[in-house]
Amino acid sequence: VPEPTDEALMEQYLKGDAKAFEALLRRHERAVYHFLFRMVRHKQTSEDLLQDTFLRVVHHAKDFQGRSKFTTWVFTIARNLCLDHSRRQKFRKHASLDAPLSDDKDSASRVDFVPSREASPQEELSAKELMARLDKAMLTLSEDQKEVFLLREKSGLPFKEIAEIVGCPENTVKTRMRHALEKLQKALETEREELAKVAG
Amino acid sequence: MNCETLDNLLLDLLYDEVEGDDKRQAQAHLNGCEGCQQKFAGMGGVRQMFQAMPEPELPALSYQALLAEANTAAKKYAQGLASPNKKETESFWAKFSAGMRILWSPPVAVAVGVVLVLGVSLSLNTQHEAAQTPVVATEPMPASIVIDTPTRIEAAIAPSSTIAPAIPVAFSPEENIPKIELATEADETLAKARLEAPRGMFGGKLAEEAPSNNKAQGEGVGAGDIDGSFGVDSAAIPGNASAELFTVQTMALAAEGKCPEAEKTARAISAGTASWCQSMQASAKCFEQSKHGEQTKALYNEMKSFDSCAAEAEKALAALNKSQVGGTDTGTKSTIRSDLKKKAKPDPAPKAADKENVLDPFKKNISF
Image (cartoon, rainbow over all chains, first blue to last red; front, top):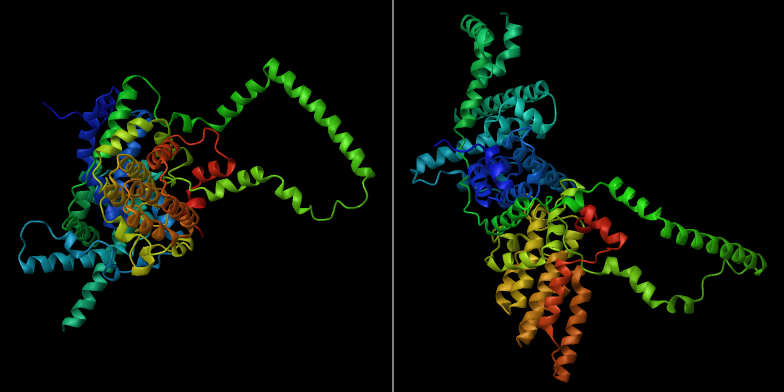
């Protein structure tokens, strides 16, 4: 039996089937959480935003007309919550927003990124190093570039859908993505060169 | 295909979003062009690295409250009722035109006409008298006149001095649903809150992350600033809906006499926020009811250190001392219940200032 589509589940939910909502939640919680986490870079806040995102799905289920995909809709909600959050952060003058992750005591610890399976110390170290490098590179991206990059790369959404989510033409999305990839490439190269200098 | 055309398609090629002839031609060009190959490989390398980027484990979240909410809403949807936020999403113009329709109904129109006529004649009369009054109008109003109207003064002060519930995150004004939801579904929310574990649905770290004093928060500085972390005032920032639920939950626990649990839940809210004050007060009252005087005082004393609830705490402490001296303890439980009711069913006609705060969370929780 094929799995019901998201849209079919929404329809069932609107007919009163609360289980359909739970199925949607379980299906998308991970992707939405990862997106939120990468955007806000704070574990507890991402958890709260995840709950808020789905709370809004509950309250606005009637507004979902099925004209766009469910994923588009749910990521739009998540993204808007992120925007609200970062706006508040800006008001609160969080200088640490752009600070490297390593200085950030309450941000996700490196351990959070290490897969839960038993990893050898060396594996753990390389996972941490990789994480640190990529995270540092991510800091070079603007918010616009970051969200497009994450939606494409981590959430696996096509450019057309991302354009709907961020509310701009597909070509703009592609330009942002292109710039993001180029910046990341450059940042990673620079770091590699620095590491090479230190090593020898 | 030349390099420029391929460059335009590079991203589509990278993410396999190009098909048919375009794809074949692009691949053919790529195979023969070293420059384009380098570009493609460079971007592909970045992609590979990020694909290998370890993702954080999804924490085991409790969705109890969320699922209970979903259940309630599902029932409504099944009955064909509008979405829970329907009332809030009703546009300004819809409200305005409804108001105008009422205004222009014959009895109201007659009444308005009479009031207008009386008003104009009174105004003319006053102007006539004022013209005859010696020049004292610029003098300050005698103090007695101000003191004469305490009720009005209280009413004017009330909106800013009462502890208003925390405001949910503004997705857009009509997104402030959780508050409305609580208002219209007090019983369901209460039942739901009772189901919740004290830790609540948003994890148990909030208390640790709360700002150490209210002043810091008032200046727009959260705990995150102190230790250099990101947004940590979770109950006050994105999870105001969660602060709301925590408050209701605390009150439900307090009403049931589960004071330690109520206190624990209250502590999950960012200290010093309106919701926190309200929840701590409910917990304190619970302890007071169960004759735990020391704990009651401790909570009130803690509240005293925050500007937002210092007044309430002092008042409560004074009352507590008085009752201890007099040996009376008047219906705390009923007060909690009435608090809960108040929380669940706010004034149907909120004062302008309160309404404004509901629509603009920045005004209530964040100073800048």
